[in-house]
Image (cartoon, rainbow, N blue to C red; front, side, top):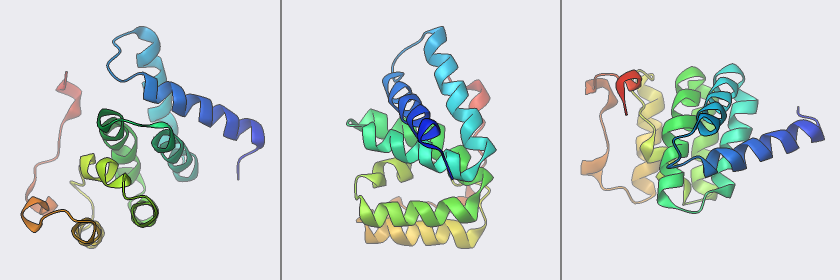
Length: 145
């Protein structure tokens, strides 16, 4: 899958990605952009980067940033593969709930987001906080600040 050098490069990028939270610099923008390109280009590389960033994160803000900036585009582009991996990660790491809850699942096939909602319920998310993603208008992040 990945060579040792590629794994080390992804690990370094994941660490840099987590450090960009709250930064408004050209370097932070470049790091987030590079991570985004990788996430959208290959499900295996994107998942590895997301997992490595999750392992390096320690704060709620970091977990939520990973969910919105890495997991969300990854699961949108590769829904079946990444949904299954996300559910397995949720079972293995309860803290992954913070990452998964931040990702918008608009546009995913109903069976996928229903499986994710079922897993969220099992993880303790109250039923009234689960989202019927078929009723939500897709989020346009291009105008976000």
